Image (cartoon, rainbow, N blue to C red; front, side):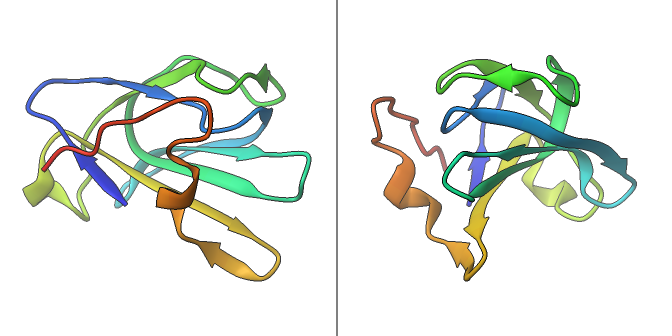
Amino acid sequence: IDYVGEKEFEVVAILNGTVSNIKEDENIGKTIEIKHEDGKVSVYQSLGQIKVKQGDIVNQGQVIATSGTNELDKELGNHLHFEIYDNAGHINPESYLNTEISLKKEN
């Protein structure tokens, strides 16, 4: 899912977990991966400022970064690309958006 905003916005952890990877790719931008106790992994791409480091334990709703841009989806401008998956593959991230916290999807 892509969340687009005219202005930079805060990106929060969708679930409790541990920051397992932070990387920067010239096409998809800055990325944070968070591993969760149930085996799921959430991925946040196209980030601006990173506010956590690898190994940090984060709580659901904690600010982990700000939105940003990337080369692959530069037509979107400022945005967040969000994915969640487990061993079986990708999971529909919308099914997690109302788990204790609520995120607004902007067009």
